[in-house]
Length: 264
Ligand SMILES: [Zn+2]
Image 1 (cartoon, protein in one colour):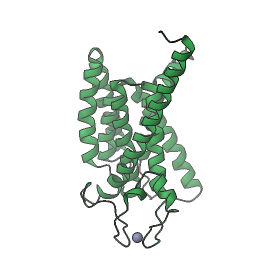
Image 2 (tube, rainbow, N blue to C red):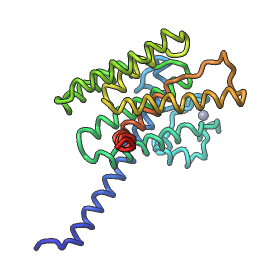
Image 3 (tube, rainbow, N blue to C red):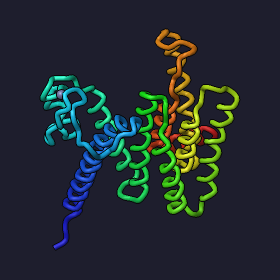
Image 4 (cartoon, rainbow, N blue to C red):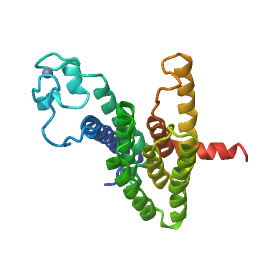
């Protein structure tokens, strides 16, 4: 009664495809919650009550319009009751989180590391958009993030405990030195975010920091050159740290390996 090799292969592929779909949908649902976090946490509002409502007319959002991405498409990007535009950012954050969760599943498979990666990506997305909007990185995200991150890393890799501690303290210390040398550039929030990044990424934090400064620097230069920002304008660094960190957890090992292989 055994399955043939081909039948087994097909069954495995179907399970893989199903799991990938579950990861994508889980990410979109979490992304929908992140929209609430990004909107309400900086204002000190409750994350659970009241339920989703239009900021203009106050009408509660019907559950079927609250389905990630689909709801926005069904509504044509407008409130059903008053026609106010719903920013494209909402479905974009849902799609971004969905894509991140899917890639993390493809990288880690069903292992404890996947849960760490999902939590980490969710925290990074929330931090990036809150920093873009308000120039703050909330302690309520990065402090629990750092504690959970270091506990998870030490539990998963007890033999490399020193690597994670060194990565967190090193990354935070590096940004602290920059903040002391150039006051006004780097904030305390960036330093705490770097601590969380190192605690989760270990040696991968090198890749994350390098990419953050590379992309942040290039975008900063472009914004100045195009006169979209002046020398005195503040440019939040959190989104670049988040981008570097997300790349670090999803592709850090490959990037580090291919870099090291250049030197044989
Ligand atoms: Zn409305």
